[in-house]
Length: 92
Image (tube, rainbow, N blue to C red; front, side, top):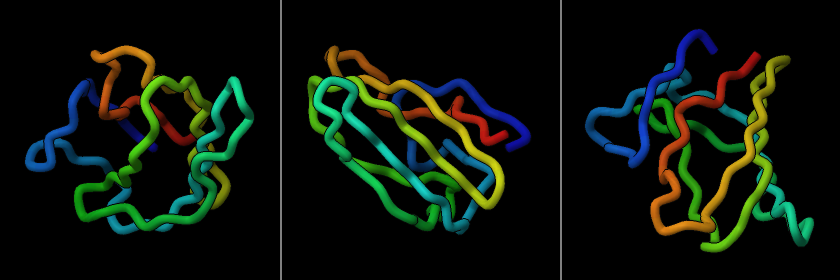
């Protein structure tokens, strides 16, 4: 909500998000099929992150919400070198 940081491949020991142990709503929708891959409320881990396994070869819209703030981003698992960690989604 206040800051983001650069990251490409998540490190469980050094990556820290600011929303530790918070319940957030998460939605992931495949752009080409419209399939809902994730839709629910999840509690972030002690490191401030929540993780999901997504199928390879998709482009999707990710939406996260906490109370009255929301953030949306386009994500991809199309290429071998696509990011496995998204730290730039800021809730506003």
